[in-house]
Image (spheres, rainbow, N blue to C red):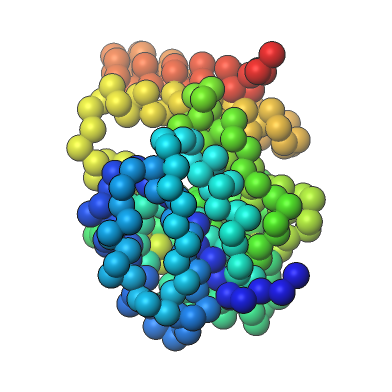
Length: 283
């Protein structure tokens, strides 16, 4: 397959113009790359096209208009348009450091890896998850908190996202689609993927958003269902399953004894969600 671009970025959004503007500005500020080697494919679920008038004119821009849909479905709509040797999936509310793409491409082009994942921080430098301090090779178990906006892969046109999973899932399996995508690359195509804490991608932390406790609980439950479904799909070591189910169960008991109602409820729904996801079937 011949590639006309080095890297393709697939992005979708409903109505986050301010965040999309921030991403476009960060993309325009990339250093050490040729913008003619960059493709941005945007799947618009609302009316955000005017935001991209500010995009560097050398960037190849492909635009898809669609109705509201799941994150996985939107990404799958874009995959046939990919022209890059490499592909990434930036969230609509993430943004890059000026050297993010140049560091990614250096590793992918020179260090023999098929993928690389970086570290996520918010605008104040706070980690968005539990990222390791040292670089390492990602495995199916040691995933180094890799999440969609930190991931960059050699493009494989045969691999797509499981549309049962992810934000907007019709089955409320609200997470795990990017992990499933990465695991398929590792297991089926022997991808070697590096984790590098020197690569920074910014993204708000959950607590940065002005949301209610009930909204946070609902999100945790949906994500737990996605996590359980991921465990159903992939064969992890037994200890992994034990840890995944015992942690929320233990939290539920501990917080109940401490009379922390909110945390006990959240742990219960995480346990319940993982069980439901693990045993989920469409039929």
